[in-house]
Image 1 (spheres, one colour):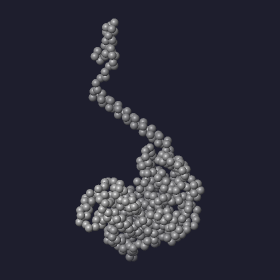
Image 2: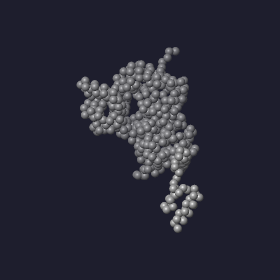
Image 3: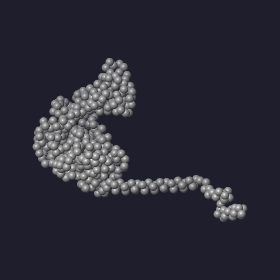
Image 4: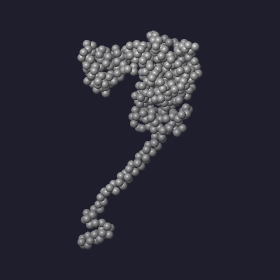
Amino acid sequence: MDHLLRRKNRSNDAENGLQEKDYDSKTKALPRLPRLTRQNAKSYAVALVLCLVLCFVLLNAARMFLFRNLLGSGSQTYQNYELRFVNKSTAMRQMDRNMMITANHRINLREHEKFMTRLMTVLDREISHCNYTRGNALNLCCLFRKNNVMRCFPSLIGIGAQKSGSTVLFARMMVDSRIHQGDKKEHHFFDFDDRWVFGAGMYLRSFPGLNQQQIYEGIAAEYTPSYILPRMAMRRMRNLLPHSRLLMVVRDPVDRAWSEIQMKLRNDEALVAYTRTLMADQDISSCFVKGNATRFDKVFKACVPKNLQKSPRAFGFQIRATRFFRNTTRVNDCIDQLKLSDMPGETWTHCMITPPKDMIALEDDEHDIVQDLYRERTQLANCFKTQQRLCHGMANRKPSDISTDYLYRGLYAYHIEECWRWFPKEQLLVIENEEVKSEPDKVMQKMLRHAGLPPVDAGNDEDAWKEFRKHYPGFEDSTGWKHSKPMPDIPAKVREFLVYFYEKPGQRLEELIGRKFPHWQKPQRLE
């Protein structure tokens, strides 16, 4: 019987085209697959690639559908925006890269409110919702779940210019109880990448919590004079706070540049004294040499006592020392000098703090200052094609590139034009420094009306500086800025250079904003 069944199976296999060796009737195994050939391999590879491409397209379409429905960006207001569910740093970088607002200055209030609510909820789990509150001014506020407190983004933002009297005006603003300042005088949120990537929640936490009456009657405000410089700061501010009111104080660019030079010299002198204190200690200097130069911030914390780490000059020292210790050649040359020196602290200070060639020397030397200004003017030479046209490529520079520029900060006309590209003209108020000095009450009333607040008595300077030093006790030491500190007279060669350099930019500014500046220094020409 088994013999007949086996023969029948063989006949069935023969009809189906199977070899006897490929099939075992006892085990009933499946037939073997044909061997993989080169032609079959190509077919399998093509099929695999097509499957991967199809999966990628489907996943990308699902992702875009999810982001559009989650964020509700609004096709009429925002374009090409997507946000990844990752940490805050990557999320804010993604927002800075992909979020583009249309050229039209008008933004739908409800759409932006929905956008901010969804954005802040994604970035910060402690935030419940954000909305615009209509009181005397338009405030964008968010509710924190933890303590059920409302914090508001600044409705009035000072954007410039450095050494133009911004601190004086900010101090007078502090007398008004309706204007709420943050925990810093200068936040640098929009122009510093290392602060921007931490997210808007961190920026919002630096402002005080407000009740409903305070929100209705007042506003939050901040003043960072370097916001006007890079284009990215204006773009970020436009994306996050498109309805904020902007404030800019301008000063005679000649006096402004000389004031910044003096501040730089004072900072360098204080930094030299701090470096001498540190490097005079043999243990600290030896610890620096043995440490990892690429992570000098950790080396600094491990080598320096805590009381010296809290100095306002500690941060500037870390920047200079990091650059110095990364240069092995300079470190070895300095060690060779130490072997022949009787004053190791002075030798270390000379090696580390001696300014590079593109920085003003520590000595207040007229020739060195003029040479540095000539060097910067060469860099800005292409900015003046004609009297009316400025170099628009300068706006792509980062804050680190303009931190030691003295001429660029005084090009007010160019900075204002760049600001108007992102904000309507009526949202920017330009005030002259002479007005702040001669008519402080009138300036305060103008600023309050611009911010949307009813004008009140602005108080006096004595109350303003008392309130300012109470809130920011270490500001003067950390920045090298001193209120009413007399400055040395500007050298004749430096004055002549600055006066002739700012002649055409000054004319362009007067044409741009439609007002004259008779107090500003102009070149004396023979008729």
